[in-house]
Length: 71
Image (cartoon, rainbow, N blue to C red; front, side, top):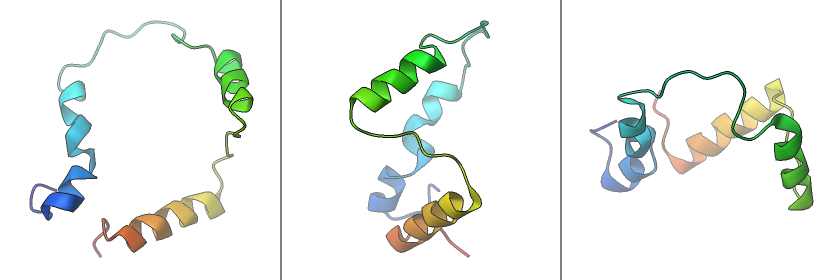
């Protein structure tokens, strides 16, 4: 990823890798429970998509269209 052009590198996961260098300790539960998250998303007028084969295909096509995937 470091070999990507600057624009693509800025859109890659490289920008968030530092957060994962030293992971936080595991804790039970979630800081935002699922029901609370779902309510907040619905309140915003959006929906949480189900992860289907078609959705994954769309994401891959979108990433390919942005030129961030290589074959």
